[in-house]
Length: 305
Ligand code: MTE
Image 1 (cartoon, rainbow, N blue to C red):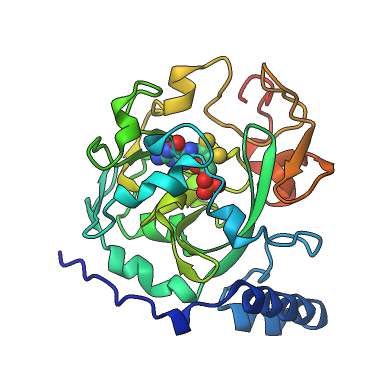
Image 2 (cartoon, protein in one colour):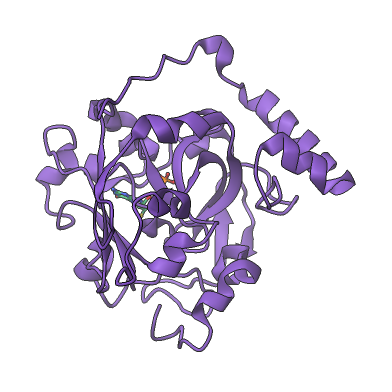
């Protein structure tokens, strides 16, 4: 398979943040006036251009790209922006294997094509009780998985980040059992809110945010949104994940944002949006309960946290 290096983005093609925000404001007004216009402009099918309600102003690009968690480059929030330049994101390929009828490799070029077409603004909530609102570009994970024809035995999806300590020096330290691993239940993976993201703010994904592609699962704590993915495996069994393996008492497999279930070392009742001083009450499923609560009907969410 040929992975073509996309043409470099010219400075004139990059949407400045102010223009971007103005465009979003226009889209929002259009959404109130006529949902149809907003849908057409955003190039999304069957859903509103704005995933987050109007009160959610996007977090400034600078904050989104300078306050990160990416332990492969260090454990402080500033480390990823400082050190992730050593990650080489081309060529890049993602193996898709396991319970699929057509195992193969994901074509990065294919994913980068809808880069400007599909935009979604999602809240991302970290387990440490801070949150951001981010305009992403990407493609729903379910659309991608369908290409590989999941078998009826596929119950879970496992994801793995690149393991290469030369490019990711944080992997020389035993903070986690590398590579970073994550997993979703099949219905969570196929849910239209689950995005395989390739960019943000109209630009290609910066390395510190998980280039060239990462997961975004907006109703779960941020650690589920694994970065720089190189392997996707469909499995019959629930896969081991980095955080739930390293500290099962603190990090569960599901990790749905839930103000009723505290982290053992801090409350999850309130969160601080980056750029704001006041704290906000944490919303169940990070504000996406209408869309996803049914996935967990009948489950004890205190136990399956
Ligand atoms: N993916 C990898 N490979 N390594 C990481 O350390 N951190 C996770 C998640 N994905 C992490 C990762 C955590 S804890 C969070 S909160 C989010 O990425 C942060 O995403 P952001 O830096 O884009 O805000």
